[in-house]
Length: 271
Image (cartoon, rainbow, N blue to C red; front, side):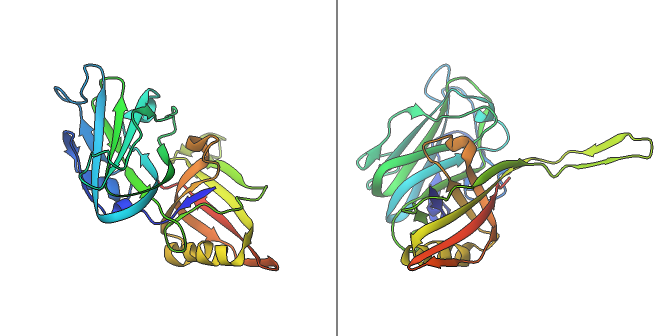
């Protein structure tokens, strides 16, 4: 399990090498329906049959990076599975490769699931970065609702991989709060609302120090309105089992046994 709870991109200066319809600064703020949008134009994407959107950033100083996520909104690669990504990190310039270059790799996009993730094999320390999204087709625009970056280790780093992951009994579901009712004539009236995902999981069997330095601080800093990125199983169905959104419920921290503390979270997808 991985929990990202301090988005470093929110504190970075963003720019782009792409043609723009909606400002790149939108990639740092909610709602996801207010996206950063890059439009297709002559020569855009570097290829006759592809479209690329690029996000560049300057964090202002060197910092640790472990995980990046692009959460699209609206149109673009939401419905395309032939999407590649490339991540570059540098201490000299945005787009440089002196620290890290993933090369062009599959983004793993699935129809109906709008997240693209890249987890670095090892922690990398860099000031500058670039994230490229390339759709292997000509499209009118690529939208990014939020672009996120997490990294570090230790208390208050904002990136936590608990030594002991979630306990059995965790659950994931699609929630539908649409209003449905019937008239006296038994006709069904419906007011459809956007569906969203919800996850419930319990973290147990971690040491008291581990939980106090991380889980307890997540509750203090984020409350029920701050966003987290929860990847329950980063290597298994990450697009379907990962959720970005607020922790809507934090149950009490339980001292289960000597030096062992547990807590249960409920996370709902941000739209």
